[in-house]
Length: 395
Image (tube, rainbow, N blue to C red; front, side, top):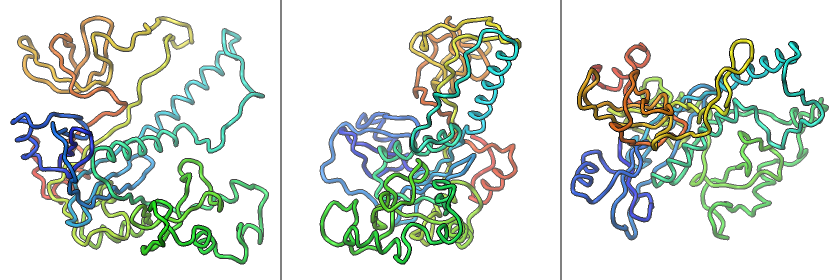
């Protein structure tokens, strides 16, 4: 994949090849800015840069969301990634907490009294498991927008009628007619904004095809009411259905994968997509740790207390580090994610303990775990790699 490039003012530039990025780093003209996604920053400012037409495409899913950045002019996939969500983990932890508190009440031991009268859900509330998925996608969309000069966003959406959820008593003809009986909703929104795109920034009528966009997206609790709708042209936002995504993928004879589905989202998908030798970044949401300060046994009694210090000797759990061990059983160079940072000079890395004096942090913990190699233990991944022309031998 291409390497993201920033100038000294952190303005995104046209992505470059890994070879050119290595030359810039070797000559001292650039430095590594971020490890995931790999981004370099130049040591000078670029005036009036020329940037390609890059579009961020998202294929949301309950367990895995595909993300791709496609060059609309050449059809090249500049970045590809798959975000693994932890929605089921969040739900199971909430269920375990609920069971523990219920057990304490039944045993008549120390507990927090149940709350019945003071439970208020704010407007636009989402279940924690669903909110975790939404925030993961939003976090990476914002992160990629700071690294690449993205000019538009395309997302696969599914139509869902929320009228009955907002008004449970509605039924019959009133439910079928909706809020604007006798007037087309889209025509009303177009006249309301005088056929102008609200994101264009000028008062002249837009020559592009105008679509109806949500001010507060439905994924964040927004509704289909007229007050939440605006006009937007296709240069700024685009949506597509799952059927269109499958049509684009099968027409181009591409294998099934989340990141490939993301590259095929939308009507303006390039006629030829260059997905050969693209190694997607596997992103797994891990969270930022637990807030539980007291560990209990199976009966709910405290057995140990954690310290209030999250960092020790400059490291914390989740940091991606490089270990240069000079001697011993694990002598050599190791790169991995710290699975345990203890309050003593012995950290857990790749299944063994290592002294922090041999460690160097290359990526700070951000709530995600990263992997670039395809797991050959999965037959689906092996078929995908073979179809894309990858070698099945690990480096």
